Length: 112
Length: 116
Image (cartoon, rainbow over all chains, first blue to last red; front, side, top):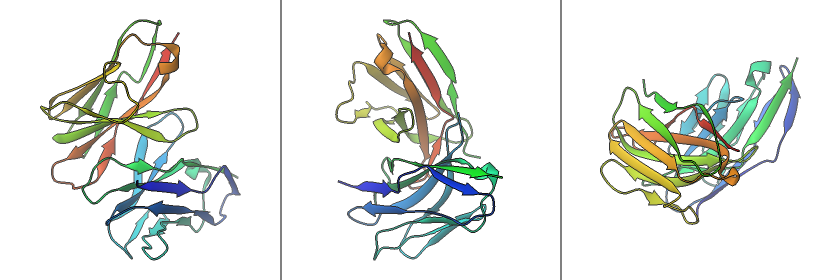
């Protein structure tokens, strides 16, 4: 079945460092890909998404490009802030738009 | 737009009691709602999918008699944890999908259930 694999955390960075969180997927058909962020004690918020190959999703300085050839959707940010500390989930939705399949999440901790 | 609320945000109950969690789409009609369970420091696991006016579809390993889901209207779904036990303690999150947005889901803030 479909699955999502994220890099293990936690990721600890200093403010203004470059961030990459790797995400790869296995899916049949043409899934849509998402990054969600969960701040402590809160629910999930959509960070960005891409619905087809070569699409780039971007929001709040974060970017991810849908790479079909490598089945990847890595999350990047050029300069992280303390406020970016959260858990980040990569997810996919199949071609039929059914429930999301999540990766295990990556905890990011940014210190000043 | 596209706001989903959950109530209560936290609940503590005694073992053997039942707890109802509400999930509401505040400004859109949700044709489909999903219920997820999240264990500490782990990912979200889909429990069930509910479509308005029909029975919920449960994922393998989820007891439908234990976790009762009702999607009575286009803006409300409820999850009832019956005869709760300490192992049911978890973070329960719902999400809702609009008719118009093909595959984007909007998440509620979650409900922290603690069973003593």
